[in-house]
Length: 289
Image 1 (cartoon, one colour):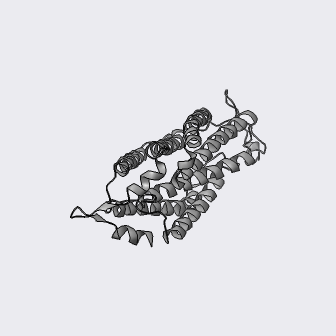
Image 2 (image 1 turned 180 degrees about the vertical axis):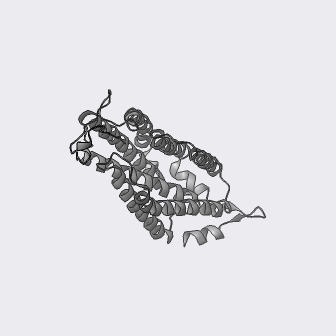
Image 3 (image 1 turned 90 degrees about the vertical axis):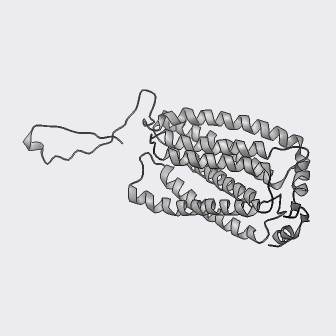
């Protein structure tokens, strides 16, 4: 925000109305102070996504015959992440050079961000539902997961478009609350369903991969809650980007592509019962849900 004051001592000018247009430019360009550091940040994030993408796509090309549907979703998240970060950088670079925020680039970057965010949440939900481990498919839950994902995408897309397309200053408190509330409720529903599914899945089997990813997710939640008490205009959006990228890296490591990808899931579907004997009854029930 900028405040411009005209001060005069002539009483004859007390009813004077001044109209005009102001143009503000910092030494480094037209970006406002709270947005200027983000241009270099998004350039750095573009590089990190490219490095992650090279690693993942090389493994994908090498083991493409063994790729699981879940790993295809991870590939989509990485792809949209690279496009999103590159577009954020070009958006800020154009804004910094011309003084006008490019509407077309902003709309695309917001859309890619929303798609990536939605797919990422669906991936975590499917993982904790045991998809590919105790569930060969989601069965009747597919439509519910799809509906939640579509609704979340719509709420997130509207919020991001209003906040970013052609905008520089933040929305007023009431206007932002009206748009944030549906997004926050749907996000909370995702989190609740994720941890409920985790509890159900862990009752059927114990896998080290679930323990490791749960630890990473718990750390992310703790850091997120702690971050609420710290405020800095440009660091706030940067923090959430880094946190989501870190979780994506954890997922890429735990569900890394290999020549045994398609063999691992079927081998872990047999669960030991309380008497040490194999029990497939619960699993068959899951498959028919």
